[in-house]
Image (cartoon, rainbow, N blue to C red; front, side, top):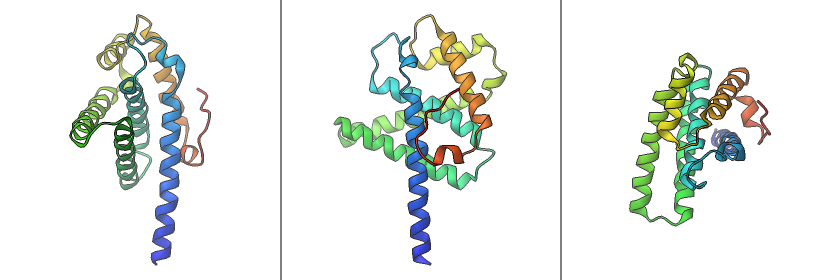
Length: 168
């Protein structure tokens, strides 16, 4: 019984690592950062990651067991916390930043919940609320529209195997 539980935990951790790394890989798309007003910073990359994660959760929340998604959500925020610590922030700063990023994710989720029903101007307003980008917001809208459609056609399994070069 214990060996089975350990194997299940190891298998789930490998799946979580692969899903997380796939989302990180998507968030490193240099074309997304070309239109940023500010320099490409950790915070900017994390916001883009949170957008990818929010669309991911939006798409799979209906298709996947809630316990699995909650466990993956917890894993993601443990990884973000480790990344923040790796940058060199102390305990008090890490706790404050984690609270900010969790609230930011919920805000993003709330805004994109009906993404498919928004017109271009509403989508631009959502993106501009979170990201300071140059005038070419349409590229971001197009990107996240294609990403959302891509997710709707994929299974969770396609994200759990290994890090892929997602084309959409």
